[in-house]
Image (cartoon, rainbow, N blue to C red; front, side):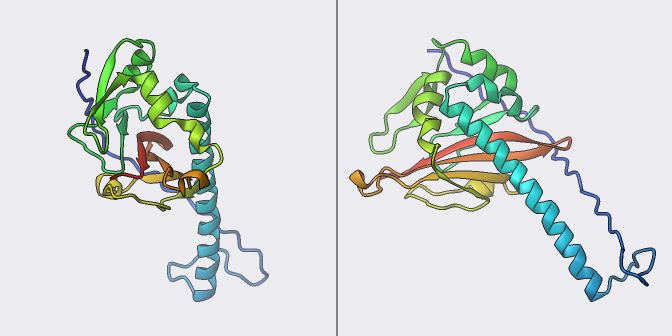
Length: 221
C-alpha cells in the first residue's frame, strides 16, 4: 500500500475588491459623490452592491455545478484546473474536517493519482464499523463522493440544509471561504435516512475562485 503525505502548502488569501461606479442621471444631482453619503444615495449604493454580489454568487454556483456534473459523469480530470494552485484540495469523508489526517492533493498530485489506479490511500474510518476506507483516488471519487447522487439536489450557498450526528466544523476550518452545498434529501424507501450532502469549498486566488475542499456528509450513528 502506498500512502501519500498530506500536501500542506499554505498561501495568503488575496481578496480582490470590486469597484462600484455610480452614474448620476437625475437633473440637478452633483457631478461627484460626496464623502458623506446622504441616506437617499446610500440606498442606491446598497442596491448596486447587492446586484454585484448576486452576480458573483450566481457565478460561483455555476462553477460548483460544473464541478458536480464532472464528478457525476466521472470526468474527474475536468476539475483539475478548478483546484487551488497553491493550497490544493482536501477530501473529508464526513462533515467533521480533520486537518491532521484528511488527504490533501496539489493539482499535480491530483492529476498524477487519477492515472495510477493501483495507488491506494487511507481516506478515513467508516462510521459504525471503524474500518479504514482504503482505495485509489478514482474509486474514492466514484463511490464515496458519488457526484451522480446530487444531479437533482437542492443547491445553497453558505447555508447548511442538513447535519447528521457528525459535528460540522467546516466554518471553523474555513472561516473566510465560500461553501456551495448540494443536498439530496433521501428516498421514501428509507424514510430519508439515506440523505447525502456534498460541500464544495472555494477560496479566492488572484481574482479567481478555486476549489480547496470536497466534503461529504451523511447520516451517521
